Length: 114
Image 1 (tube, helix red, strand yellow):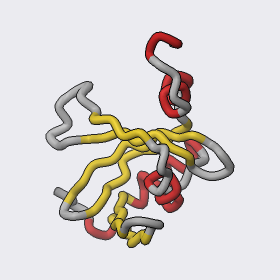
Image 2 (image 1 turned 120 degrees about the vertical axis):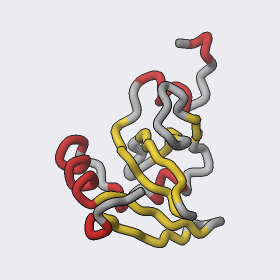
Image 3 (image 1 turned 135 degrees about the vertical axis):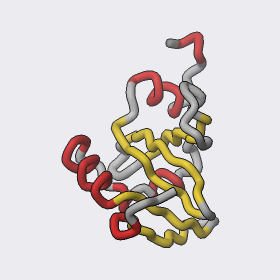
């Protein structure tokens, strides 16, 4: 449930093969941009990446299903985006550069190569 509707930012993204609605908390977007230099407004690139990998985040009970998508952002930069689906929209929670293991997974190395 979203308490402060004024901080909710919703964007319609029309990808190559799909239409998707993205939303996020604007204060969270600004904090993520300051910390990681990555802007939620460009998340569409990752979701449109045909090679992107999506993994359910089962590390703890978030009260909702959270997923991590690993894919290409801009200029061949590989990122990880934590997101969930709420009321028909993809809600961006965080975005950061992919770590070494995530990049290897994205580029198709097997678990035995780690």
